[in-house]
Amino acid sequence: MQTAPETASVASTEQPFELILQRSQIRLPVAPGESMADVLQLAGVALETLCEQGVCGTCMTRWLDGEPDHRDSCLSADEQATHVAVCCARSHSATLTLDL
Ligand code: FES
Image 1 (cartoon, rainbow, N blue to C red):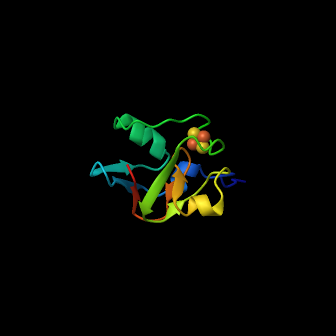
Image 2: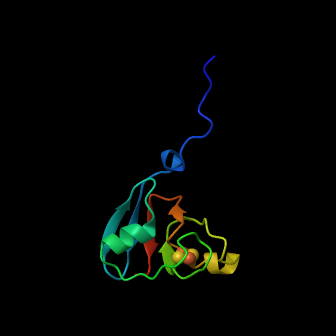
Image 3: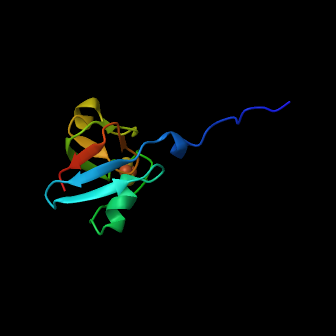
């Protein structure tokens, strides 16, 4: 008897979205399985990271528009209202605007 796969990969359930960097006027696509931190660093944006697991808060970045999918365990609800941990968060909306 054939059984279904135990779990689908996380990347296969994620949707792509676009990062908008407000101050630099740059738009960057984020593919499923990619982190915003990786995309930002590959684009040459100076960004400090440490844990890359949503634990330390080092990568905390102010967001301006969109609907972040917070996946960190370090930011309070108040902090999440204005900031996002770009090493682990994604976006529920098609675009997410950062104060960068
Ligand atoms: Fe630690 Fe993002 S690098 S929370």
